[in-house]
Image 1 (cartoon, helix red, strand yellow):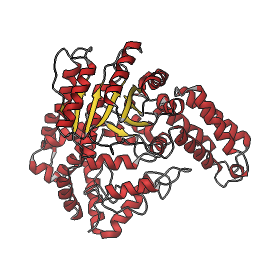
Image 2: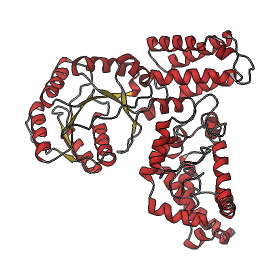
Image 3: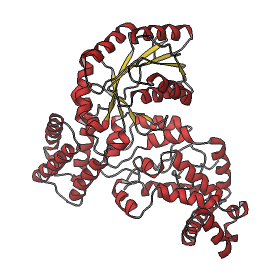
Image 4: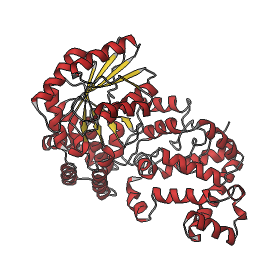
Length: 508
């Protein structure tokens, strides 16, 4: 998401870099380019006008003109403007501190991903908040809608209300409330019916269900790919339902991101979650500062750590950490790192969260380095014997030909993989010999690689907020590396490591 906007803005900032003094004419020219970039990203025109007006007001005066690095000031202006446009620093979570059951009403048009999002949200609440969740489908019109929610419930291991044929949506809502109270559920999610377009009958039914259930949260699920239509839909629903928040789906397929940038400004409603994939766990908490960081190439390390915490097999990671501290790294370890990277979203999913990657995306794409390469590498390793994976040096010409036939690749690709592994193994061995200093140097080096400065952030952007640092400390076992390099506290991935490359554990 925001890929095209990020590329345009990065180009604007690059043209300003290196200028010793930035005149007001330069500022006007930069803001004109930013305006065009926002409009091309399908941001609503009134929102763009307000954004540029505020940015120009902040840019006037000696603070920008006489700055040592004036281009950084423009980056900062755009960054702060994006954060404000997206809702500011206040992260709007779900209100679950009510007398159980907390009722969450899910509304939206047909095809927006409402039913799937209901299951994703239920899984997140059950997994992250440790609450007992019941889901109920109130969609009596779309064929197999209730069966779909029941199937998703089994997949997410979340209970669903038994289907009773012939009941109306209001009757199902009453039965769901009673079942939630009697079953001791903490949260009840009501998946309402949608239509292909807005109509009075759908709005009336949703309003009736809201009157019966008195929901604590009324969330609109909107498809980010529909652009400004999603904004208009949100306004129409809010007029009838008194929505408390928005969930944008299919954000992984929306390179422009105009709907997300317009939603908060036009409706005044907070965006609470982003659906970023088809998997049942592909739901992210929306954080304006972190999203702005992604747009401007600063990445989102907090989201990366959260994803790692959720996906890492800690027993396996501890085992690998012990090997790495001894300077051992064989092909089985490389295969494990490749699998871990795939679980965390693959190359594309991780690149958007890593600081400083925006500028090298094109080079990476042109080099042909994508998830298919990693899957082929994993297939190559899987075609080897246990001895070959443990001791790659035994792979002579005849063994390589056998492995190549088994994996369906050329011998040259096997040689490239072995060279890559040898470099990584040498690095692991070097770091283990260096002790604490070796790991510290690696962390510092990784911090520099992932940004442009010692903190790993692109010029002009501030370091993570105190709230983000606290979240990182909580996720990472209470410790953070001083230079911003690496993922803290994750066995086998901390203290300077990064997903897809061999991690370097904290020295005990």
